[in-house]
Length: 399
Image 1: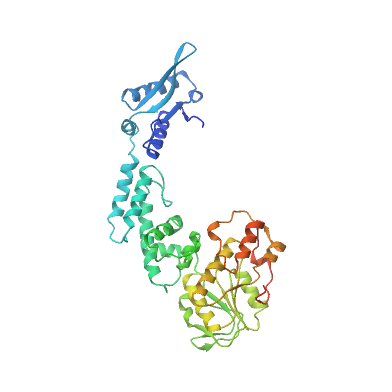
Image 2 (image 1 turned 30 degrees about the vertical axis):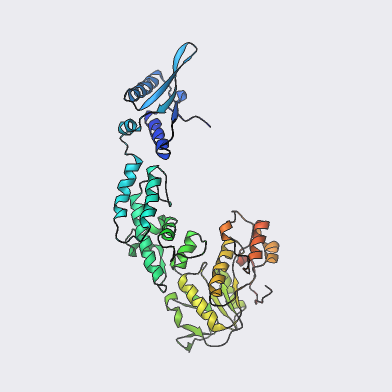
């Protein structure tokens, strides 16, 4: 382990205090003098005299040793952190954490068990360590996170809430408009600890997690292709239709369909609607990437109405498998089966490209999933395939 060397007294002291706060039980916290950084005799004299003054006050102990017949300085050991805090006018992290968390603890909108989570944050901050993506002492970030979590809890309770973009949601929660963008990894983690019974069940990344609650960077309309009726009235034969997702319950079918196909990416949706479903014999639904809860409700409702085989076409990668699994689980709760379309091992091996990131074990679908074999092939081959690389085809259970 390399020595921690310093030619600046303040940096040396802050380093000693950082390590003390990280591990208050440590018995020997040492730093060393960087002789190369002290380029003149005057600089070295000032540096040494400053250290001697701190040692005299009891803050540090300087090791002295003889080398080539002369006394030289060795290590600098922390002795009394209180002296060092005063010397650099620094507030101890434990005190700062207590102040930062004071307002949070007295909030009236905290659920049962929230104080235990705040204690975790306080413990981490008192050691100079971040927690839940919040840097030590970030009281404004914590306050905004709690506001956003509370607003999400209300939204989760209201399963039919209209989709909303990040910035509008942030403002509605009473925080700065860019708060959710800054705290996008923090908010889901806190929500899952505060409201485990309301949190999305799947292992999702932050953006997908928020999307299930209808909070996205840009909310997508509900876009469909097929024999569509609105409030029981058949629509003119267009290639596809788009409606506000919160009004999607007015959509229905004006005729029977051969199959229902959900599609992850917009380009592939448009191609399938134009090239394959131009006779409107099927119901095609664009999921907008990871489907929001509002979209998902309409997908399940329309699937039950269609009484036809249900397929999903998405990217052949960890995200695509994650989306398929989310749809598969949700449909299974209604007794409906989902089949992959153009998401197979043969297509991966023939058209796939080398992936640039590791697969997350948490994304692995259960063994009974229709894409479990595809997941195993993704792991073994280190390949991925964007669905736009393939031309649309009429689905069958063999694809």
